[in-house]
Every structure is written in C-alpha cells, then in structure tokens.
Length: 130
Image (cartoon, rainbow, N blue to C red; front, side, top):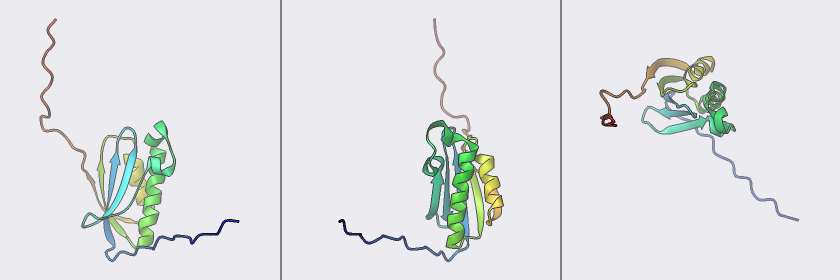
C-alpha cells in the first residue's frame, strides 16, 4: 500500500495596495488576461488555453469571458478592489472581457486602448516586374 504524501498548499497572497491594472491582449487566436499591481508585478493571469479550450475555440469571446471571470475572482480574493483596464490587439475577446470586468465586483477607473499602430511602418516590397 502506498504512503500518502503531504499535500502541498499554496499560501494565500494578500496585497497591500487595492489598485491594479488589467492587461487584455486579444489576438485572432487567443485572449490573454494579466493582472498586475502598479509596479508591474504580475498577480494573476489566465487565457483561453488555460481555461481548457483548444484550437479555434480559444479565440472565441466566450473563452475570453471565462478567463476574465477566473482572473477577477482570484484578484478579488487577494484584496484588489479598483483596476485600470488596458486593451490591446484586434481579437474578438476585447469587448466581452471588458464587460466581464464590469460585472465583477471590481471598480473600473479607466479603460485605455494600447493597440500598437504603425506610424508609416515597414517599407513595402518592391514592385513586381513581369
């Protein structure tokens, strides 16, 4: 008969500051939600793949909604109460993630779009000569 090993439990983290930043990176293939404090230290994160979806289901707005719910619950238990939201990328999970943060118990102080936009960008390829 095998011996029962000691169970390893994670220590619950309590944070001192009640303000944080939610970074939502929404691409065409996945949505990644990261919560950090004001200094940039990551408190919690989740994505469509971490929730359990694979393939094209990761890119749906429902997967983004479930990932956001999980992250909001984790940081609310840590003691976070108000957040700034930074949204980046062209994916379908942008709006559903913001709505989920609004319906959770976290107070949103600002919403900011940080999608990178090229200011003239890369040089295009040369014209084809046939």
